[in-house]
Length: 499
Ligand code: ADP
Image (tube, rainbow, N blue to C red):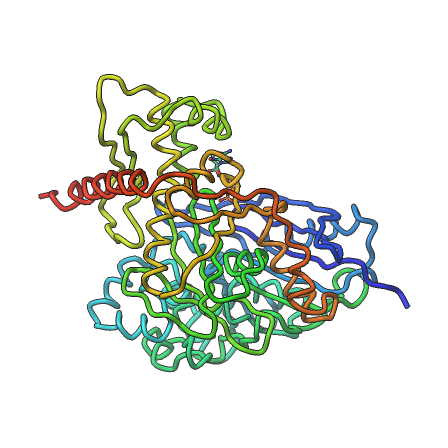
């Protein structure tokens, strides 16, 4: 019998679709990526053409198979990971979308969420879904489509339409419309799903006037969703998970207290809290983690709105850098940031501050401050913001962190990683392979089909490229953090003083 050699990870992101073929050791055997258009119909609105999502994801998958010389018979399973919260509605009979996908970043329903708060539903949403009500999540986007696309509500009430996040849309198309399903991590970002009872919540469906015939079946992340014949033979679709949850799994964050920190354009911190859904009082989100066993696992999630984006700002707007990577060499030239702190609150401050009107703030300027000090202060801000989330997570979960696994583009910066270890008094571990999102989807799919035996089997694939151990005194750490806390208070005061 033909031994299956590969697992396919379909990594459907906000700006591009990607496909990676992994072998049994978790090594990349081929990768193809393609960008697709972003649609901005009005300021603050963001859409994708659902056909672009499907076509690019199919295209890259076929090319990646071709590059590796793989046929359907060589593929053990497909795992899907995707941009979360993005909302699609299509016709059940034809598969035609009724409108463009509304992307997670889209703010068109921000006022609707204000109304939800006035209606006194904030606490209910937090308790049931683990989320803080926001236009990011799918619920208000889906309601918007039903209310604004001509005929959509009537058709939905007649049972003619289907709703899904990107994973559901891909599964539907991959199975020729036979399977309408999602996984529990994606469901947990819709703001319609009760993460404790693991079912669509009747009260929230009623509030947003969502007919239940629209909704996909919810399955565990690592399970058989269906079979696809798209690639010249039958292949099981054996996993789906939201991108951040897939990354935690790809980092082998299986145990309570395991944390991963992603340093990309924004920053994402996820902590596995095991079978306990830890409620947050400090603005973290409670969400379902991807898991391979029968039991539901939860995570606490916090995000930094502006992380690597602050470095892009130095490069593209201030023109202080030629490349993002140059920050490392500049930071190393200095003893410290010369007392300068930059709080890159360009779009307000998220957890644990939640100050939407805060703005970017530079404090501590003296006559001796140079361009290099400013660059160093911005680079350090990535670590300070991540540390704020870590502090909140430690307090709320009551779990002790032993180490922090890092990934994302800016995790390549050794100075930044060392500074993070110093600041957070934690050992950092950077894996050899930082494409952890795709790897997580592959692992989940490979576990569901026996390609990998168990979690121990894949843990053996996780290879550490480098560790960073804390190396400063307690006094020094406290003095750095005190300065940062003062700087944040300045950014917040700027917001509050407005009259
Ligand atoms: P995303 O997936 O969010 O698009 P990536 O994980 O590719 O982002 O990371 C890109 C971000 O990381 C950019 O904002 C860039 O400024 C930053 N970045 C990349 N390399 C470095 C580096 N060596 N030092 C600091 N920042 C970096």
